[in-house]
Structure formats: C-alpha cells, structure tokens
Length: 452
Image (tube, rainbow, N blue to C red; front, top):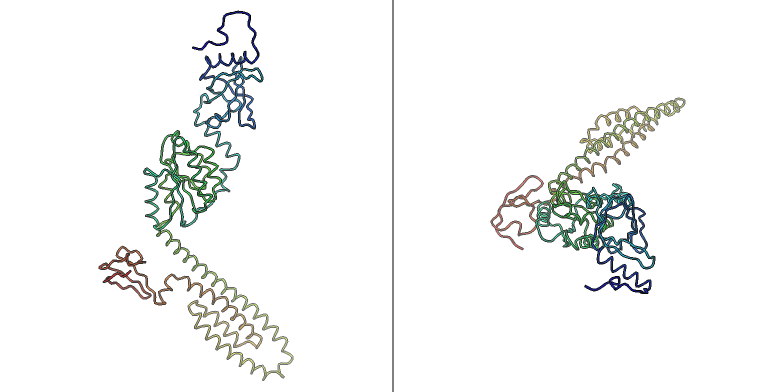
C-alpha cells in the first residue's frame, strides 16, 4: 500500500496548502468511497453547468453535496427540498473553497419507492407544462393508409399487431422502427423512432408498443425523453404499453392510450363491416334530412302561398272595384289565358312531384288560380317555380346518393365464393363460382378460364 502524506514520521514538516488539500483528498478516497448517507435535502440549486448543489442534513449536522451533470441525468429521483433520502457517493475536498463536500452518485427516497417517486415527480412536472391536457390531443385518422410502429422487432407484440392490422383491413402500409424497449439504450432508440416518423412525415399515425412487465421493465416509457418525443410528434401517437392495468408517462402524453398492443391495432383500423355500416347510416341520415327539408319547404310554401295570395287578392279587388265595368271583358280574357297556362304547368308539376305527395297543395293552388285574377296567377306561378328550383336539386341529390345507381348504367359487382369482390383474375381462379350483382338481381356463374 502506498503511504499517505500523513504516515511520514513526526518531524517538522512544511506543507503547501495544495499538498495539504491533496493529503485530505487521498485520506477521504481511502475511507469514504461508495458510502450511503441518510438525511434531508435542502437548499437545492441547479447551476447553468447542469450540476446540482444542495445540503444534506439531520437534527445536529449538515454537509454540502454536489451531483455532477453526468450523474444527475441518470437519477430516477431528482434532488428536491424537504425530501428524506439515502444518498450514495464519496467524500471529497474542494480546494478552491477549502470545503469538504459529498459527491452524490445516486439518490433513493426513504419510505417511498424510488421508481414510483420519480414517476410522480415527472408526472407533476409535465402536468404543469400542459403535456397531458385533453385540448392538445389529436383525433386519429379515420382509415390511415400508412402506419408507423416503434417497438422491438422480435417477440409476440409485433406479430400480434401485424396480424390484427392485416385481418381488419388488408392493404395498409406498415413500417416498423426497431427499438429496444427495455434496458440500456432503449430510451434513446424509442425516442429516435418516434422522431423519425415525426420528421419523415411518412406515417399518418404512430403506435408505440411494448408487452407487459414490472415497473422496472416498463421504465423506458416513464422517461422524460420519450415523453417529450411523443408530445413533439407531428402525427397522432397511440401508446400501447404493457397490460390494461399498467400506466406509464407515455400513456398520459399520447393522443390515445390503448390497454394492450393488440387493442392499439384494433383502434387504429376499423373493420370493413364497420365502414359499410357508417356509409349505410350516413345514407339513412341523409335521406331523413332531405325528407325533413322537403316537408319543411312544403309547409313554408303552403303558408306563404295562402297568406300572400289572400293579401294580394284583397288588394287587387279593392284597386279594381272602381273600374270593373270597363275592364270586365279584358279581365276575363286574361284570367282565362293565365288559367290555361297554369293548368298546363300544374299537370307537368304533378307528374314530376307525385312521389313527394304534394297533390293537396297543387289542388289548392289550382282552385286559387280558377278564382283569382291575373296578379294572383302570376304570384302562384312564381311560388311554384321557386318550389321546383328548391325541390329539383334535392331530389337529384337523393338519387345520386344511392350506392346502386351505378348498376343502372350496366355495371355489375362480381364476388367470389368467399363473398369478396373480384378485383383481379387471381381472386377467382378457373373452376370457381362467382356471383354478379346487376341492377335487377344477381347472376351465378362458373369461371372457365382466368386471364391475366
């Protein structure tokens, strides 16, 4: 063993301050390395250099502590005033101030699990920054074409996810970013995978997935770097970490949390049947809306026609009362001509709008035309023209919404024995049965030869 400066025989020696400091440091290194100290943290300060300075104290004593940036970044439990901890490190002598200090390498909270405490610390911090706010969470695309997945390339997770995606809606493009999901280097790899999809703009949605495990196993997804990568991603992110009862910081930051990786695959893609149900429901709602609009317009036209026609009739009678004798013949001719034109137009409108059951309103208009003057006839014709202008586009829109409309033009929908739509000869090989649905029904046939 190398003799220390203080082991030399007692004699008159003269030491420089630097030599004395070096001797103290060497003595500390031999006796006070890798020790644990229990105490309460106070006076915590984070320097621009990234080092943390604080005091560790008990009822009767205290010691100055420093945690260098290289150690601080890996601490799961960060220094915090008032926290009772066990700090591991070594004793050191700081020459510049002539002070003894404790170099902290790790910290564990007393009476509280270190990982759980670190989890709560980061959760509180990110909550204050608004990273968990519901207002910043984005909706998933309804039917994404390109799906990015950040997970381990081996194991059951990726296999299950890919199988479910293919089963629910084949033909989607999936790109997997391989990453460690546990252990050294996993934090950086997961964060890089998320940033890759965010930067490239290829994916419409990203799934971050990992199977179940203990709190230690899932800790990668409780790290701040991963949380900020998710928050900064340019596309929606689904967090699918562990089992349904497992919660990580990534779950709170993500736009959507899936209870399992398999559930994430089901959430990101609907089934074909679900999409067809949406279209059917949309068609029904559109039909109901059009019918309601037609009924509303009909009632409005009826009210306007009756009220305004009555007022116009009274005004016309009053204006012409004084000259009725002189204009009787001319009025009769005008009324007769207008009535004939009105009858012809009414017949045309009745044939086109019979399906909308507006016969009552036309009968009323017809009676009004028979008994009104020329002003009344012009008013009713104007109302009828506006009604046609409103009802015509609505009727055409309803007709165009029918998914069977295209079959009336001579097209057919061909399905194979499994009920799938035939898009290429490979979907219906020679010798198999097919069914062609046309406008008036269906036709069954057998494929004699499949040509590419």
